[in-house]
Length: 484
Image (cartoon, rainbow, N blue to C red; front, side, top):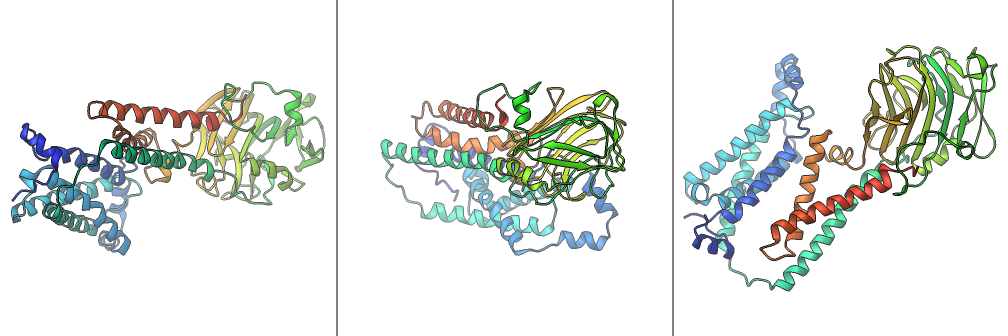
């Protein structure tokens, strides 16, 4: 007997000529959307995995294919439970009976979808394909089918809630989900503060302390300061020209006016001196800066922690450097200015990688090397002209400006951080899918506040307005963090 347990709404639709499973079809396809979202990340096909398998030992490949882990087995069963439950409910004529034929069809459909996913994961970096995934997905599908049978045989009609109680429940769910989503979007700014910065790292210009990331060029000025508090005022970006007050508030300001010697000085915010020195420091004529030789980098003489503590507390910074590269082909990346201990651990680094400019900052999500999340600007060093570079950071928001104009693609919060943190990968497609995934439930809940005539447009409008609200808040407090 088919599983016609669709409820009062579907019964009335059936009388009007609507198929019995219509009330469940949208649920089934929404689940399929989330299933693809979970299993096909990071949505960037590559043949690299196939190439690695081709070069691997056959025994190693076989071991990977039959990998068994208790948590992995449980996850794969649970993942396909909804599939086995929703498919017979959505398509009762073909999959919704209790006969062996219907059971076989449902199980075959689950295995086919699982086989497609496992095959697709061969082309997705960071994903793995195992035979036990296929078996456990099939088992989960059968369990879901059995739950659908129990659901239909035990379900009794319930008195419908009155409209006022429905709306009260919907309001509570909308508020709770909206608050949870707002908290989720704020999470990257908390996770990407400077609480993971290490103490005791030296400040270096032109190389790492290990002297294996040399940069060769000229520098006429370096300014380091914290970013002002966020807010919607101002036009964003960095100022084209600082005032004397800006320089007085800077934590460090090297203008290289000494003109000779091996030591340079900067006044600190507390009025003290901060010194850096190099072996046989080369000076440009007429007080126009220094020539940086990667073999003889400048290194801080005084402890850096007292100077960097305000940056650590604020979790925001602006690093301004006026520079000219000697060789557009320098790579490594070649360290221009860095606060780091070695090539694998840093608090921040401004560097040249060929023609590109990169800015790495240590956070929980970016990692100790700052390389998992970094701002970059391609083609900055295609010529040897003088450049003013501004590297800005504020709790995950990171951007580069060259000669006062935005360069490259900024890291935005939460767009660049949340999809990656949730295992959805990086890139524009990941951002779009992330917002679809989190806004669809909000729109559905909000639509319950309206009558059936207005539910669909109201749900779309509520999701869109909530999206605008979240993006506006992020823009005010993160995308324009410096108030210029």
